[in-house]
Amino acid sequence: MCTTCGCGTGQTLINGKPLHRPHRHGEPLRFRVHESNTQVAEVSTSRIVKLEQDILAKNNGYAEANRRYLSGRGIFALNLVSSPGSGKTTLLVKTIEALNGTLPLAVIEGDQQTDNDAARIRAAGAPAIQINTGKGCHLDARMVGQAMQQLDLPNGSLLLIENVGNLVCPASFDLGEAHKVVILSVTEGEDKPLKYPDMFRAANLMLLNKCDLLPHLDFDVNLAIEYAHRINPELQVIRISATSGEGMPQWLEWINGGCRHAVATKPEEQLG
Amino acid sequence: MHEMSLAESVRQIIEDAARKQNFARVKTVWLEIGQLACVEKESMRFCFDAAMRGSIAEQALLEIVETAGRGQCVKCQLEVPVAALYEPCPSCGSYEVRVTGGNEMRVKELEVE
Image (cartoon, rainbow over all chains, first blue to last red):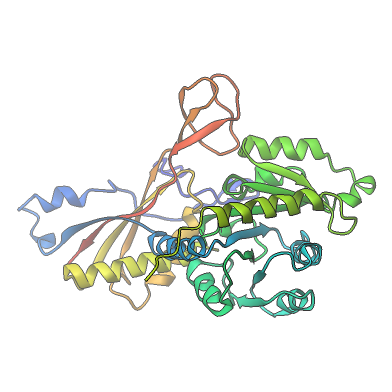
């Protein structure tokens, strides 16, 4: 908080102290007064334009279009989000191998640079499109919409979208997916849900990954789950290991359940 | 740094409004940002200046109006203030607090000429 006037200057802290930025103090909406005051000649050419527009409206519009496209084809889409290095791509590769062609699926890979991840997915036998966001820190709905058009997914598919490894920014950007799935690996801290609450709030399922390593770590599984439930009491949790296969049957059943639901709720095709 | 994307969206909203409502310069931009929205105000200020460069809002002053986080406790049904998503209900201590306000990210109004 600003010590001059008490106004908030953001939550950025440096060594625990708020960042102070010189700024103008004043009534935020003072121009409304000027507007109706004919004595203030120098601002008489100014006017106030009311907008009340959601900053994310454009992204949300694209996301809704994606959602319509997906539901019209009975496609179950998941947006996988996590920190870098949580094992998302390995988990995807194992998931593709375990599904073993039982349902049509495709992957959209998001990374700032390289198509290494898409190459790994293709080697596992699934079509993949790599989106490189360049300097961008998240996928947005427009990028994903364009990638979906290129994939030309058959009806009843599973679409796995691996977002850029980042627990912050992708939380705000709806891609049109059915669910966000957050992956937390046990080599990270138990308090990640408290440190990055927006993502754990936005997700419907948490995969607690790399559980095969638990015997070698001090990671407290129950504490991690408790923290996640503080942020999001309805968050489902599956303990999983892409290496040992622990939890894979539950994960595959969760996916299959979602796919069955997507197909069952697909609108009837219009005849003629 | 998704604030850059958000600032670019603000620029698009301003440019769309300029075409429809016929103005050539923006002097002030008021953003309404909820306390629980995924926006860091300092980053937004920094990105705003960068994103507006070369636009009709290049010299515009950015005013951020913060709205308070609000929620309803699922257990005791009380309407409570929510300063952060990990905070419990101040009355009964439950973490099951449903957020009812303070998520906004809106371009509220512009002062234009």
